[in-house]
Figure (cartoon, rainbow, N blue to C red):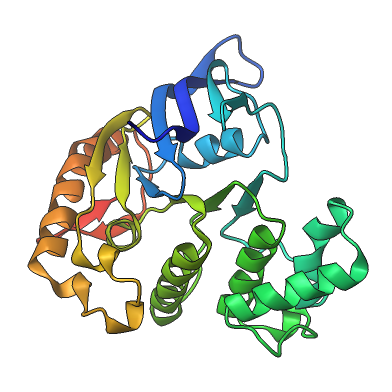
Length: 286
């Protein structure tokens, strides 16, 4: 008996009108994808492939031009507390403490003050910020701000966590640390996560599956299963460095190869892409 889908994208299309012209351009075309409950799926694609557009649709921040998006079998028609969103920019309220930012969504749910405080403290501890609840955003590092943003999105107990390149602005060491933290949090909460990134290494390290988008209009080109041993190990502290393993390199090369032709199309159309290192050391653009 198959597991019912938690999140469904069925033939999703998104067109945008060109200002001052009759024509429109298509950002996404016939995107179909299913996530099961508790799955960690990563989405990669060339610049302009519609990754962030897709997240806006899932977040209810815009509406599709065709197709449908379903969460637990119900259409997504607008923003809602059943979805938590973490952006690249932390989007914290500067006049609120870390604890106050985490409590923000709880207030919208009408949860009483004492219970809000208890929930916020739990999630501060979950993201490794125990003792930092009274700090304001300007008193926190970039990595700490992103931890607060993750805690805020988890605190109101959403059905799905949507993450749009949340670690892209961080230095390499902080980024790898937060990747490990996110995997730990995912294991402990069992949340369904859709994670968008332009980094192939990050996609392979985090995802159970990686969905590869084509260049514009974005379509699902392939879905790659990530069969790394670490996925079965509940204690990340015991993991070896899987990034240097042969299997990691094989999967990375496969995804990079899938993206190569899409990057070439972007460049032929005059697009600008973000540089990533290919498996042979040359620049790929993802």
